[in-house]
Image 1: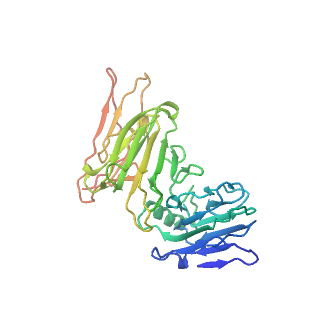
Image 2 (image 1 turned 45 degrees about the vertical axis):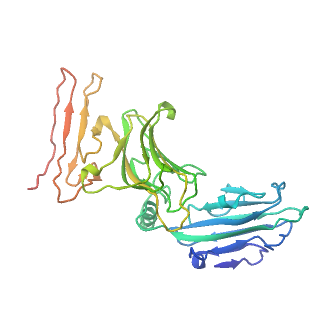
Image 3 (image 1 turned 90 degrees about the vertical axis):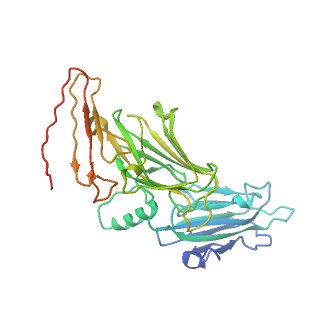
Length: 381
């Protein structure tokens, strides 16, 4: 739905009511299109939704400005609410770029397009722009949809959520780059932020431990990589000191789709060395340009663990843990807690009817003993 703003010569507001049909998206144009636009214009196009789960896609089909007047004839695109003094532009366009690359996506329910013109100079063959806007909801069950629902659930409670996409710290001005610190987010879920995204997308997720005894444990709960010949792929890197260098742990290429099932053998877990940062990247060359279609995604969960206290989780097992003696002379002490259907507060990936066997392995260096004290236990037959 297009709404004209009173006392604003060329400002417009577009809402989702009539702009959610992918077969007939709403159209927006520069003043006077397809003719010459007026000089000294400052127009704003507001794309807004009251639904926090709504996201916006704008695409330019025509963009034809003076080639050498980028200082005075241009378009700014803002991701989110508009504030001329504080919001950085997501993208600035001018001249005559290729329109097949001019597709932009919001990370929330609002976008703003700002149109600026100066004095008109010959030759007068430029006609401005014409584009389409489409509003779309995330499909239920996606990671972002989960956090939107959680945000509503926390409205009347005491909840602290850094961002509705996930719990963590989003890199400023990025599309889908995230940083997770063990001292602020010890465990959470993570995933791709939306069901459609631009070409040549790179999403990064950095998991940074706070001490030399901590490591991150990542479980990939599901992922789908449809593009063949490794056009879409995941990579896990263990970074070196100060986040530099390091090694490749795993690369997963499309086409492949996988879900964690009730069988523990379906687990896909990865871990860094103690004190090292783990970097997960999602790379998509083709992108996903179809709104409402979730063709490629990743979804997972992570937990930071202190090996000295919690032991070292044995990868790709339900609940096996290894406690290794260290090189120090002082006695090492740790703790373990086992609850049926639960491991350190995290759910088992197994059917409730299946038999679960947890193996706890304690090993010490020569001439050192091991003692295990059971403080409390309940066995249910």
